[in-house]
Length: 155
Image (cartoon, rainbow, N blue to C red; front, side):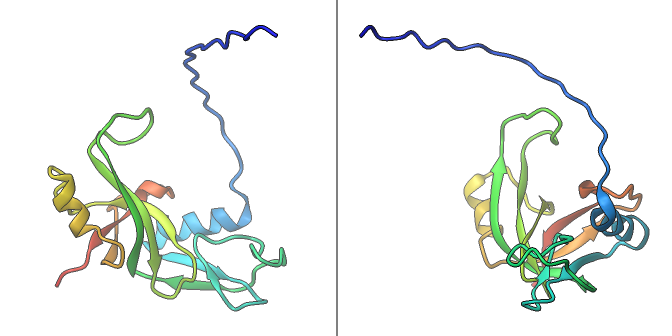
């Protein structure tokens, strides 16, 4: 049997599309846009608060129930610092990660600000897992993930 040559091809795709967010995500982003507040949705079976909210429980697939305001404080669960340029993302350097907001039982992704990213080692100390953060909101919000970010809590 002869060895097959595997080819590579570089392709540049730019796909723009519009899709409906649905009832749960729409309500979530309207609260961020209009009230500068983040909410999760309760899993009726376990009582957990899912944030970002889901229409259905990730464990039972039953519909989630009431809305619960979470944050603005929370704890860093994971983070990364990005120094290379990626299409459709902020200019580097920037930090992104997951935060368990107070009152939530799942972590939400977002950008970190208020940390000098010049030295990756020093920035990593400021963004260490378990670090308390607070949620900040843009003055002008459009109902998008860029409307909020996390900063290390004072003290």
